[in-house]
Amino acid sequence: MQKLYTDPLTKGMLLLEDWTNKIATSKYNPFYYHGALPQFFLWVLFLTGLLLFAYYIPTIDNAYASEKLINAWTSVDYITNTIPFGAVFRGMHRYAGDAMVLTIVLHVLRVWFTDRYRQYRIVQWLSGVVLLLMVLFIGQTGYYLVWDDRSLILTRMTVSAFDALPLIGGPLKTWFLNGEEITNLTLSNFLFIHIGLSFGLLFGLWIHYVRMQRPVITPPPAINYILVAILLMVVAWMPIASGNMAQLTQQPTSFEIDWFFLWPYWMMANMPLGAYWLVLIVGTVLLCLIPYTAKTPPVEAAEVVLNKCTGCSLCSKDCPYNAIEMVPAPAGSRFKLLATVKEFRCSGCGVCVGACAFDAIDLPNLLDTDVTSQIKALVQN
Ligand code: HEM
Ligand code: SF4
Ligand code: SF4
Image (cartoon, rainbow, N blue to C red; front, side):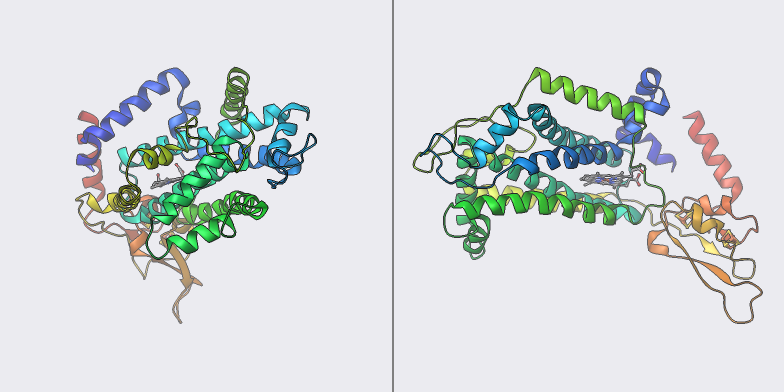
């Protein structure tokens, strides 16, 4: 414990938070809502996406043949220029996506730098890596849906990247294009992936939260209002516009990068595709391995004193990591339930010891006097 709070990364992060507290007060300090912020932007994305979905038409038909086209590009144009507030909703959808990535990065740095990412938090970390990959891919499919020059070049680059993969490349390409070449069915597939994976995020988040008793998933209303106001200001400052309508007969060669979502395409353009996949795969594996790199003493899980436990469940309700399960008490007991500790989930935090009024749960090798002397040492540091 002593070592933890003297670690330079942790100390730096806590100093930054302390400094932010002086400006924003602890109630409105955004660092304390590091996980709730991306969750908030996800709700904004769902709401604004609903409006876009209502008017979006996933086809590439007649891409440049007639004056009165009805296809993906013209439907996006209709949303932006004809529907009241359509441009605002489109802009909010785009920038909420960027903000989600930004706040996920903040969230990851926060949990990493404050040492809240390993051992009993491993499920949160690993599910977080999957969520991050999903968010990035969902954002990229959003760029394909506009069906402008950039969408076309990104689609073709993705196909080339799949082509470079041995064995699975071919099937992946067919799945991605929904056939062997770009057709109307390709855009239906992009829309399906974009929306389907977004709902998949909810399942991923359920796994992310399942081991936490009280995850903080909503920022206070004042922060939400400020975030919406910031989004609106950014939309007014940098309105979103599509490029030219995609034309399959042409081959655009350059496009504007959104560094939040499209950096993999920058990599694709600047390195051999084999190296691109290698960097992506090794990067993901390293991210997954981060929690296993820290050298820390094993956690001493809490222990229930069987003959003292009354089965009152207070410890189970208070445990932050859902590590205490109430099971039926053995035959002959005066009580109905008995607390049992799932050791692999226990952080050794001692909250249960404080919750129990019957001295029926202990942390082995950690006496009250030890805790007091450790706290004194920390305060003096
Ligand atoms: C869709 C993106 C994500 C959302 C909405 C999200 C949301 C959250 C929320 C609300 C919490 C609870 C925070 C608290 O109660 O203080 C949390 C915890 C956590 N998240 Fe995420 N998260 C996301 C992505 C990630 C990623 C990419 C990682 C790491 C690779 C990650 C790692 C963790 C860890 C380790 C915890 C536990 C922290 C603790 O116990 O204090 N999360 N997340
Ligand atoms: S020490 Fe107690 S409260 Fe803390 S995680 Fe373990 S069982 Fe839960
Ligand atoms: S708080 Fe104490 S008495 Fe109540 S269930 Fe937990 S260990 Fe048993």
